[in-house]
Length: 414
Image (cartoon, rainbow, N blue to C red):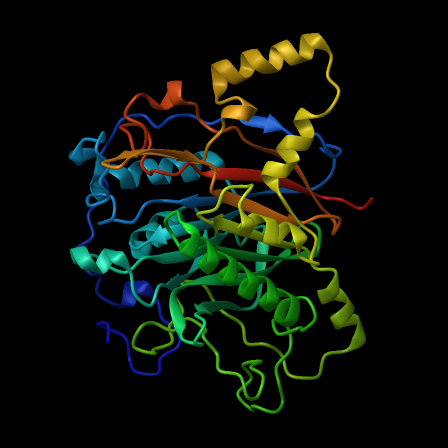
């Protein structure tokens, strides 16, 4: 049991318990590479209320130093060097919602993002490769700006199951947020699917994404579990009878909510009425994370084929490229790509050199339910090889082997 965690306790403030190592202020580093926006084809009126959401695999402490990044100098892999660059990237994004993967210094991130006004929650893996090197387990986290969004009910963490029904180390974290500016709701889910290339690993990812999508369809879109509770279980937790809950359980079976100062309201009592069910049916969903799967993979094909009507932000970019532009505008686009980031055909979300060779792919995704009042209007352009340099990622000016992906969405009433 972790220090400061009482048995059976379901929530606590991180500042009320000791950390795995003494906290130190981040050291100064090189200037972070700056990011630029690219407009998307189906952009909406500027008068539409928009919000920004970000996903980023920040590279876990311990996996960085032992990740076989053969072209990256070891001092650049230390957390004390990378942490300030991570915060600078998040500051530049000014996202209303932040989804992070490979987080194993949640307390420090929560501290710095708390100073910026964010509130957050965290789901740790049951077991993590970080533990081989005596570092804390990593997991996924969601932060949001409470001035813009209000948490509805409680965050929910769910672990994936293997073919025998046993929990895998990976899972997904989800929240229901209400936009104060538009009075709309959105379901946000972040995950980190099975790593490594290969047929066996791809089959695991397919199994995991099927479980996630099934969960969304059964538990989020047609049940109002965030706003109602089950009268049968008597605990006000909204858990269905006969189903075990995986909410925020660690490897020892202890439930915990990593929220810092975040106040979590209990679901209200009462049965779901027809208007609430109808509202859940029309709540848009955004799924973000490191899927370890390229856009043309079977994993991504499974997502596109699902009845929920999910579309990738990378698909929107492809639609933009197929649009009709004048030769002058096309030349401007090519010039801008060369000056301010990778071209559409060359974009990648991760690039690294390891002993076995180079890996440069798009495996980080933002999926959204197309046609459910949300429309992407812009996103960050991916950094180019020229900007990053010959040593790839991580580098002196960028702290992870993955690039942060930021998208601006507008509420669409059409």
